[in-house]
Length: 244
Image 1: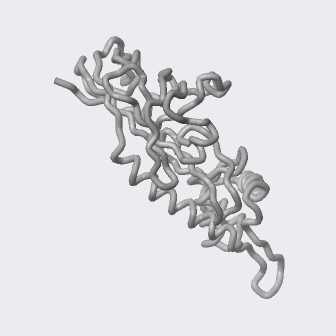
Image 2 (image 1 turned 30 degrees about the vertical axis):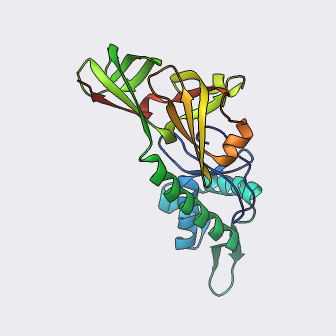
């Protein structure tokens, strides 16, 4: 999702990705997410030949790395093979499944970043309050909280599609999100692109807010024209520019 979770299949099969406010690609299997830090852990195991050395190289504790690997393997299947003793002194190596999982992660990361970089929504408004670098901007869609290093009073708040999370308006998860910006709206268009879907949401502004979801997320949320949703995004996910 950007904003919802999908049950993926075994690594190398069909599944979905997710992006966060920092546009971090994530693979999901049930409630378990496989993200950038997990990719780094597996690659470090491959490079160093042991989980202990991998954790040390990444500045993490062995116990934490071991627990995380156990969680990942419970969801995605065996990822690391360990050998004890022997002429080589033992060590760890990635399984074929881990290799497929890493390849899939990188493939989706590249695909999603290419689409998201060109999909943005800009809300024009007036700054009504400022606390440090955080401003409250009054827009047609409502009050938005954004990071604004500029001092101008008339600004544009830019929101990338991959930073927008969508929830059904009747979902409990709406109340659980930590994002300060929450806009109720109605889906007015869904454009599917291979594994991705560009969802347009009417939030009361002069143009719809665009959210980038996986096709699996759209299906799980039953997203279609007319669906009532809540779109949310974090203050740190915005970019503010002066407007004439």
